[in-house]
Image (cartoon, rainbow, N blue to C red):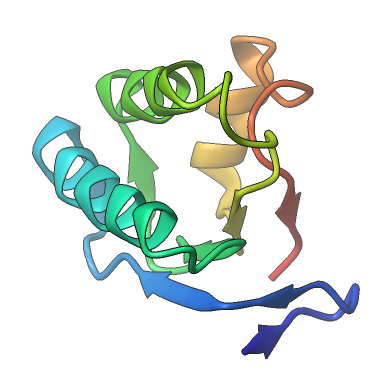
Length: 106
C-alpha cells in the first residue's frame, strides 16, 4: 500500500508516463483502473505527475468511467494525484473539481 501526505493509503498505484494525456492514453489507463477495481485493489492512486497537457477527450474518459461505476463504487475509488497546472486548470475550467476523484498537490 502507498500513502499520500494526507494519510490516505492506496492498494494500487498507476503512473502515467505520457507528457500528453490524450484519448488513447486515457483508454489504456481506464483499462488498468477497471482491472484494479475488478480485482478489489481500491482505492487506486493515478499519478499524473508527468502529464503536462490533458486533452478534453481524456477528461471525458475519466468522467465516463465514474458514471459507468457510479452504481457500484464510491467516487473515491481512484484519485488523480500530482496534477500539473494545465490538467488542474482544465478540470476547474469545466467545473468538475467537485465531481472528479480527489486530487492532491505534488
